Length: 362
Image 1 (cartoon, rainbow, N blue to C red):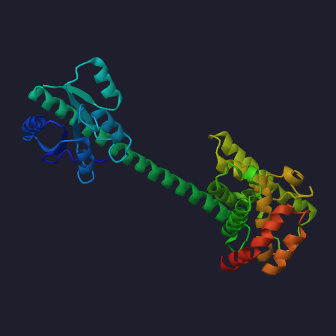
Image 2: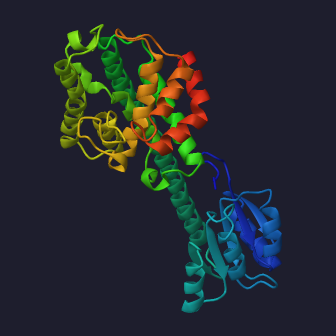
Image 3: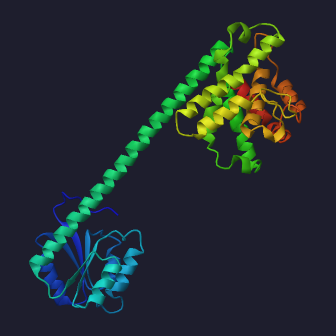
């Protein structure tokens, strides 16, 4: 609920009382400083609230039909009106009545007959407090917006740094470009399919998909440490060279572990470490670097294996021609249960046509 600005000439006060004399006296006391709306009943007050948003309500307790206690309960139960400050004006002087009024949400309790200067001062003090509360709320909201903007800037900066590192790896690997972007999109297609079909829901519970997709950029970061002579060799690697090539998984994983040692645990780094270290593992246990088998391979690595191999198949490399998307699809499907998780291969087959679109457009 927004109140009238502190700079407004007259703040609005609803004066609610079934006694016409009290309304007249109260209006005369307040009219020099405030815009006063004399209201003879709670029912009329609620009708008026549909068109007038007051800065304060002065509410009598003893009224026919709907008394002050019932009226404030209704006010506080309605999100449109629950922040309007209410002061009870009443002839009730016992402690129990005052306590009940305050417990229902009234900010003050003034007994009749009241002193005009004292009533004006109380209203002034309460309105000043409400203005300060509103200013504090606006400041807090502004501060939250600023924090969100700064956080977004930091995240964008982190993503830009990660993307640049991934691009550097691509350039060294003599890749024609787009590998990182394509594999991220392949992963997104697989993840969306799994979510839609409720597949591996337990394994993915708690995942932040944005962090996962961003972390996939680093899957080959360890290749930074591999010689250009091996990375860009036009022919088949020797066994010794292939053994060196395989170390890019452990090198990348160790690099990420070092980052984790110097920072708080973060989902981005956890996903990145699993992808970097396990995307060359195979379902039958014949992969590297740890010969993990079946579901012992983290799901992130099993997903990345399909995305990475598919993109390698459709891409030009120094040692091979690019394969068609149909050929690449058949090879992935042929690896079901040996190279790749059978369940993920089935999901891949369902979205392979979308993989082909990504391969064509990026």
